[in-house]
Image (cartoon, rainbow, N blue to C red; front, side, top):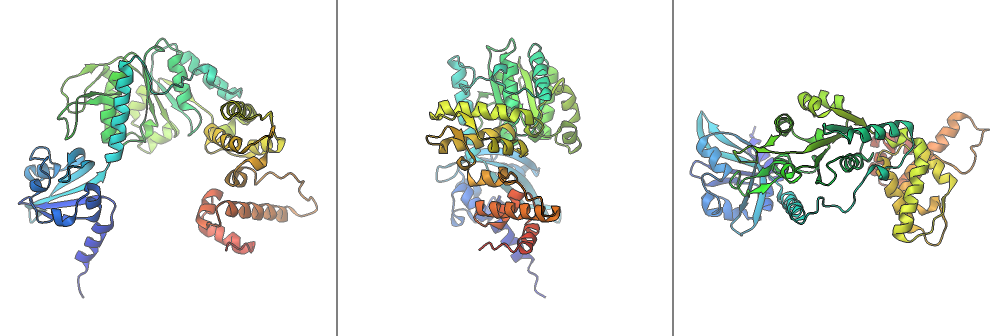
Length: 464
């Protein structure tokens, strides 16, 4: 039987998303897949069987991760590299590079690359803008400054958390805020900063989930020219926020290696730029947040236990909106007033049916979702004075209003019949809002696609 292994491997390499580049002992390229041609803007014919340094003249034996792995016969894991290809196009990648051996003899080197050019460009712009603003005396990128007076709510658990945060503002210890997405973690972090004696110093925030770890390290700690290919001398957030506060959002998404470096910052009060040798003393307060329950995150290996105990000096828990039902009407009216001014509308009240639906909905996106849905509806309002169900999008109607009916349920029918009628109506509304796309509708309903198909057959719902 013919061995198809080579054909299978070549097909896999051609269609995976990561770029793959292999050179032999003479530095000639012997494999260059489709993803790598797209990443570097090159054609295979320009690279295959050519000397590596002829194709990439801006690299050399010390700056190329491929040549390092080939010459030193060492693995290089998740290493950033910025370089120019032979079309003078700048490319930034994160590379994992390893030497290749056969019968204990080195025969070449393999590099797997992920394209982060756009992310690197965006992070460079943000860093440059932050540095520029600090030079002009402005302390933050946003003109929005949140203080405790910006926080809306009277729910007992929520107000207890805010009272605790107000006390935390008087001290300098690290804070860990736990709350689901959209519960207002950055709002509380800013309020702590602007309620402290550091209020006149910078407040700088960084989402740890938004940027790959290798770039995140440079953003936080700064870089030294030559620290890695393409690096320049630039201070990181910890230096720029001197005397102020750094807010690390979603710290549970930060890699373990970077968490260990953050632990040293907390313990020693110094940082070292990427590629640098000098320890730089810093004076910052760190406020971190997690959108997962901290002890569960530790169990899953997402947060180092030693870092957790160092940063969890002042823990603050923000309850989700479904546990603050008594705040929903207050928040809804606040957002209506906000968008009345912003959009020049004249809504005076919210329909009772809408408010009841809001109180019965689970709000997976929490306060942020509530605001976004109200903003969308306020854009649709014309000359009306009451915010009604018809002002909301079909998606919002399917999700929020499906379980709330203006008409009374017929008490003469049995409970199973009533529940089936409600379920059928919900499925029909969600399908309509998803243009009869079964996969999307199943996702909206929170059930498996196969389960939805079974219910479609059960209720004889036609999707075409």
